[in-house]
Image (cartoon, rainbow, N blue to C red; front, side, top):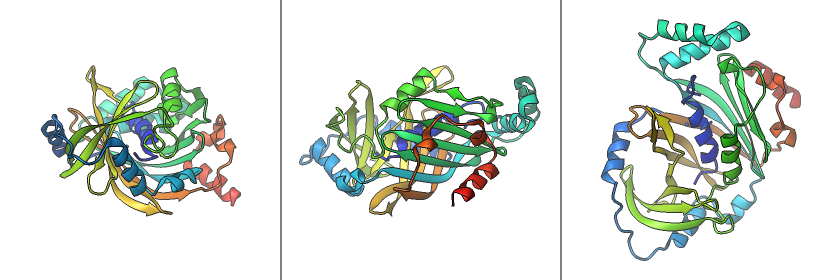
Length: 322
């Protein structure tokens, strides 16, 4: 499983809030849904490989155990899909008007543009991760930057796109989710040491290729499925956190593609999220990955108001560091 997937689930979760902005997507959803239905009953896995052997080959395909143990920080940047036409228009209106804007006026602005065909926008983001379980996510939108940080125990967020300029603590559910995430390397590396039990449930096709369907039972009892390509042994599909849509909980699938080597580690540069019964998917495109860049712990501390400013302010801060 990708080391980005946990944060991507968070990013893609944010894209279904009022602005559709955690992680990341519109391509071939019909094919995905048809594939899911066709693979409802797993084929029996071929004899010869156990779940432990599949995981071992997967870790090797991703770069190897020693290489992942050597990773202390990861810095990722790219763009993610966000929203449909009405939600983006509404949130843009709120963000641009600042503290004087109201939800009622934002909703009116959205209705005024409701005749437009639904569209998505791509928002620049920056994600920094540091052991143990520290993370910082920044997303630029309408001239402002949303910030979400986790210091390994506590989390905070600044969401100016919702006309909120205060620093909010993570909700109980958000804090629980962050605390239970795997570290940088994902849940399959050192899974036994993490208290995770892995079983092989069979074979299923993923985008036209056979894949091993693994069931992970985490230490806290939660269950997740990951699909490992039978030829490359890369994790090409991951079960995401269920999403509530139309008053029902829907299954979420994250497809991982375009794996590239970064300092010997195989990293997906394209993530695509599909939700059952939804006609639209969302993409997250990775543009750069840096391994073991120096990241001060202050980057993961409770943010100050300045960090929620514009991307220009962020660029200025970065230039001073140099």
